[in-house]
Length: 319
Image (cartoon, rainbow, N blue to C red):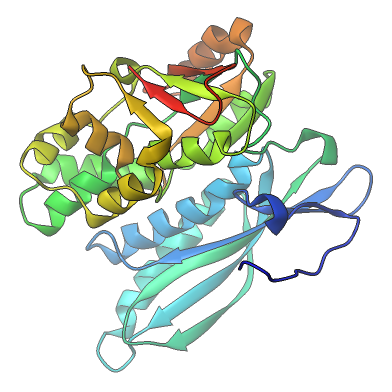
């Protein structure tokens, strides 16, 4: 996109000039629209659960901006000549059920015939213009809280290889299908300064976006990070997705690992997530209370995993 000029106006509050989880456009002094879109190929075999996961993933960007999703449109690519239309119905039903859970109304959509199946949503949400959360507004001293365990990319690689048990398949599927709604609702009552959701770039990739070109850095405590136990086991077997290596290649220049952080842990931190948790930057005096309320709400893996530091700037120190 280098050299391109994008249309804009004075009511565009978050746009492509500061790439974030979603765009935000001011409608009135009290209302702004959050707009986002996301779709992908199946990451589980069950079409109904694929629909749920894809919908939860698309809705997550609105929650990460501090907003409430309200409407959605389906995006579908389907191999009509090669696949039973009943599969598509199950995918759509999964998406509808997840939208209903989120209180979101489906208002339309678009489908195309394609050799590769894809599904997702375009989502619109509401937020007050003064309450927008972005990646770039962290403050030195903020504590960083993660709301879902890492390792879904590695576990999904094991599933594709036929090496995962039924138990872990069910657990990781439900984890990916879980909305970030409750976490967003809880954090709305706290002095949160910045937020993002952890998806394809992995934890370190999304942290790098938060500190890039900013006057602060991040210190990460690897021992405090919630991780799916099986993910470490599968990583030790070499079941690391290509996306993790791509993430490492792109962002490792911004990361300093302590000698105690072994290669398996590093793989987990670069592992691309699907419908991952929120990464929340909150005032240090309220971090403990926020974690406690998240856990009371059923988000049992919520934990403080790091802090924002004055320096070194634009670097992530992993201990």
